[in-house]
Image (tube, rainbow, N blue to C red):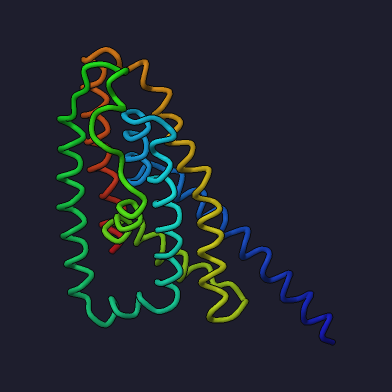
Length: 212
């Protein structure tokens, strides 16, 4: 009897994990604030100097999902004004960030790594809390993909799946930025890239914001 119940549990869990993995992959690899910032960082600072930023996004987002699943979302349901304030802070921060990206100038590719500093691990992890897309993904993952493993293990397992899936996503976007560096030796192309990245960063807020 116990073996039969275990088999049923595994059959229920595996499809749920597969669906969650597909959702996490589709959500994490599409353009959004994190990916566009990693693209820009890969272009400006190179792959290895962007690794702390990549780890901050991956682990910071995983922690956020776990905390949301363990009950943090209920606080925002009870106090909607906190969610509104978070949204305002998110938009303000990202608008400032988009402007900085747009007006950023580097005289040559060789000087890119000498100017400014990439985002730190803690900075990238903290950024998840003002990232509307991250909030949308976290709440959707926890509400739409219920794993039959218990109230504590469930959120932790969802967070683990999202962490694993996020790793190739952040790696890909940073690598794309790295390969764009030689192309951006031309100042005109660099300006076009910076303004395009800034506009896409602003546009990436729209789907997340209308979902709240």
